[in-house]
Length: 193
Image (tube, rainbow, N blue to C red; front, side):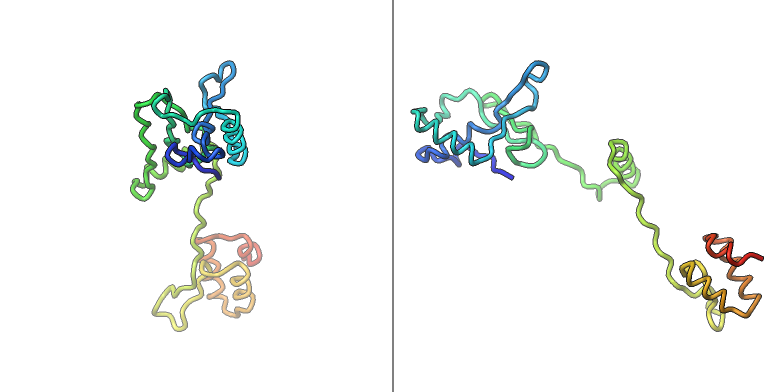
């Protein structure tokens, strides 16, 4: 993605590195955006070519004692030259404190819900978690054998069970459980009455 060059990383004797420090986060602004966050971003190969050219035409190495600006790394986001929050500021001025993002695990349930709602408001598509699939379970431990629980089976499985069933009482019990439980039309419409 690219490296943010510090002055101490640049070899002043290497023409390709001599000016890499100064060739990043160059502010550009036109009209109402003057002083905005637009920055010239050079791919490293082009920045090296410009640095070499400047060295070859006689530009002296960078002298930190003569500098009036110093590089301020991006205070939030990825540490890359493509991050528009990197900037130049007056020498001696403190860099802004980095932004610390709160860990969602340390939030209360209401705080997490507020964050999710805010993200949805901003256009992120956040789906509700998938409901847990019911598993087959014994409804009444006193039954021999255990009763069939329609909520623990798919529509196809329930329909197959009811189709092969000869006991009208059991059929009524399963349909009652389905009607008062998930009430899936694929079962109730097929087994009316």
